[in-house]
Amino acid sequence: FFGHQWTVLISPNGNDKSTEGYVSFYLVNKSPESIQAEFQIILRSTARGSFQPTTVGEVDTKWPFGMCTFGAQGGMLCSGAFAKRGTILTFLNNGTLTLEIHLRTYKKAEPTIFVPSNPFCDNVLKVFNNEEKSDVVFIVGGEVESAANRRKRAKTTPTTFHAGHLILKLNAPSLADMCKPGDEAAVPINGVEPEVFKMLLYFCYGGKVSEDELEANAKAIIEAADRFGIVNLKLQAEAVLTKQTEVTVDNMLDNLLYANSKNLALFQEKIMDFAAENGDKIVGNVSFSSVPSELISDILTAVARGKMSEGDAS
Image (cartoon, rainbow, N blue to C red; front, side, top):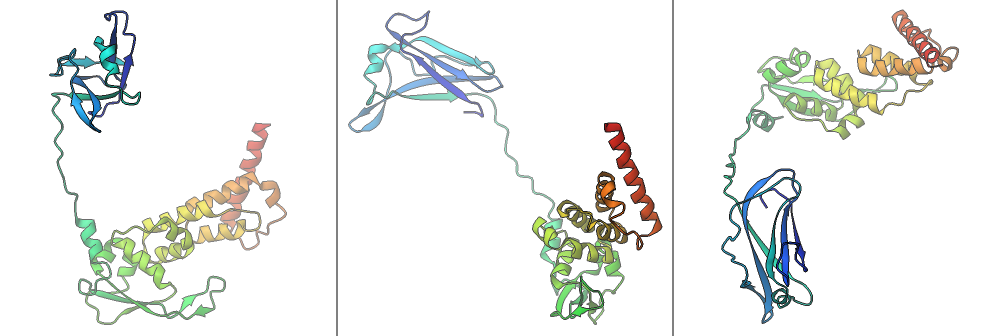
């Protein structure tokens, strides 16, 4: 009731202030906030197979207790002479006593007011890939760079996408620079899977790329987002890539070169932390012949930092 938790206690032998032969009744507020309320108790009996409201003669059920203050966490009101034990027994139904507790308060409820949210984002998403509301066209696919060997290209089915140049100008500036509003010719986009390009375009329109999609396409999204200037989506994909990649001695160098080439600071930090913790395993087992000098310096610094930490710990 009223957002509060209540407990009802009945003592068949009354309490120390009750009249002999009477049952005592307790109504307890278990919530951390106090409350003012009126209450009444009604017993119900099973007459003729159905519950019928019956009022005990000893109790005035017209809100007999007035407005009462129930303290927080255990505040109670009790009646030491709620009803005679003999009367209560007549209301038992197969050993069960049924009580109705009626509560009311004069506390004014806060009105529920519906305040609509700004519809802009929803309205933008409604025109995602809408030909009539777009002024630029992209043809995506036809050939895609192979991840294993960039010299090899795999043929894919080209897919047409429509977009608004203004939206691209705000959210994918490098992609917007590849076209002009009203261009009749479609702009070819190679090196990107159509499904990945769709995620990028959807993100530009205010949509959300799911965690599952990010996990399944982390590197592809990073590549395309970096290429078209979609910074926030690139950062989201980098965070997922960093979380899901287990850095080992065997893959550390490849991951480091990739992180450096795409300017992935978070991913690179994880790799450097690995180098700091596993310096003895890396030195002598990993060839740094193809690593830029500035990265070698960073790795050596990380290894030295790790050794210093080990020395401090010992």
